[in-house]
Amino acid sequence: MCGIVGAVAKRNIVPVLVEGLRRLEYRGYDSCGVAAIDGNGVARCARSVLRVADLERQIRDTKLLGETGIAHTRWATHGAPVTHNAHPIFSHNMIALVHNGIIENYAALRKSLRASGYKFVTQTDSEVIAHLIYSVYRDDLFSAVREAVKLLHGAYAIAVFSKNQPHRLCCARGGSPLVVGLGEHEHFLASDTLALAGSTNRFIFLKEGDVVELTLDSVRIASRNGELVQRLVHTVNTYSDAVELGPYRHFMKKEIFEQPQAIADTIAHIDAFDPELFGTGASDVFKETDSLLILACGTSYYSGLTAKYWLESIAKIPTQVEIASEYRYRDSVPNHRSLVVVISQSGETADTLAGLKHAHALGHSNTMAICNVESSTIVRLTTLRFLTHAGTEIGVASTKSFTTQLVALFVLTVTLKWLRSNTDAGLQTQYLKQLRHLPAALNSVLALEPQIIAWAKAFSHKENALFLGRGMHYPIALEGALKLKETSYIHAEAYPAGELKHGPLALVTKAMPVVTVAPNDILLEKLKANIQEVRARGGQLYVFADADTRIVNDEGLHVIRMPEHYGLLSPILHVVPLQLLAYHTACARGTDVDKPRNLAKSVTVE
Ligand code: G6P
Image (tube, rainbow, N blue to C red; front, top):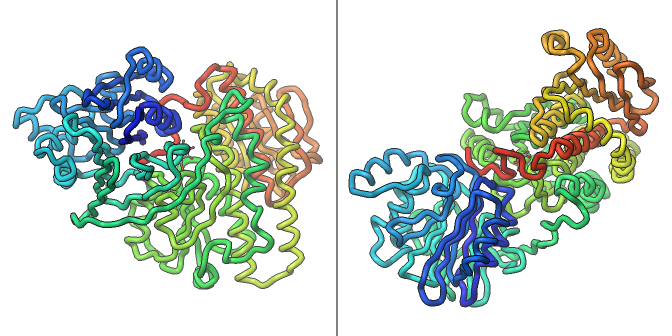
């Protein structure tokens, strides 16, 4: 994780760096810092273990400004989140460096640098990079960085300046994301394009192994094998309004309420389930596909788990869903007729990316991304793609990216079905209609918020919760439990309701709230029996029940009535009250909803 930003210009760029950090805080917020060289060649630095707002205050108070600078927001890996471990990190008061990633051979490098007399003032792995660069620096920063990165094993995106060379920055990419932004007589770098919205819309997406030198009027790029190369310039219009809260108190609530629009935007261009929606050549790929292998992490993994039910029951295509960090390290038996589908909001999650690369290494050539960021690495490395149009998601707990991923996966399911078994066109129209009606249906679920707030007050005093679901609503229960634990820090676990009697029932007492997802589907009667098993043990049930389920309020049984059952798309509606329950419980407990402790949105380290 961690976010980095840098700029070289003939004006004070500290406000650009600070604004960039504010937008990159989603990548980690254990500490932040900035270092800059002013017009007279004087370098200064500020660091904070509080948020960017505190750093801004220090900058104002000390009148820190500069025309060349780098900045960092940290998600701690090596070394506690304390001021002396905050970046920028200096070597010999000359080389300033910010780093995102993990240096795997840092211990060996540290040992040999120490033996040569280098002193370490941080516990970070990053400090070895600063010292390595210093050790080979002979007034040519570009060469020094090129030489130093050759010694690094692991993942890095770095930005560096040398105090004696103002108006010159170097950066390098090896496994962590990094873009270069082009301006008029000024240049920028950042972990993502959003950080630079408003400063430029012209970007170079660096390739693995690239080392770059930025001056006021030049950009020199050396590829992994040392050759000077040109890279394509892309125009990316990112809007800074996406990172404004507007009338909302938190991004999580804003993003929950943006779901009807996000889904409408995701399906706006669809009038038929045409393979070309997934890219040129998708039809041929789909024809030779005999199974799906879905790889993802976190919430994106749960969208894959939900889709497995659709893919196997509607498209009749065998589907395997794997947590990317497990897949990449286990021995698996590749089926080259499998389509590998990677799901990722950010398109930069290190484990998902590594899972994709592992699949490539095993000889999988048919790959697809379901992703929210067009310019992301994952999209660039897959042959097919479907972009969700959720818009920028800032809250660390994913909400609108989950429901838009589900929509994308449903579109994929129906598309595969039609290609594989040319059935009833009427059904196709019906699925399209249901998709188009989803935003309105979601609005009626969002209107349940006042009742959910009342439940959240009761939940805020609990330390444990169970979530139950069955069939394709079991992954929804998993997602509900994840949302509650990450935002409110209440220990929550989800089970398929049928598994209750095989263990978790032992946890059920009056103190245990049991949240149940109760759609009016073929498993309803089975679920009702599971509800009775909990009631008989004095458990407190909180049930989101579709209309016509005949589950009503009673002793120990609290019910919120959902709209009518929404058929196959029901999981998309049922997850929304669980998001709201987590959000309001977190608010009632006073946690930092958008930036839960120890977490970060974009996990670009293993
Ligand atoms: C982090 C975020 C989660 C997200 C997961 C995968 O853990 O906090 O909200 O689901 O990463 O991220 P991705 O961008 O790959 O969907």
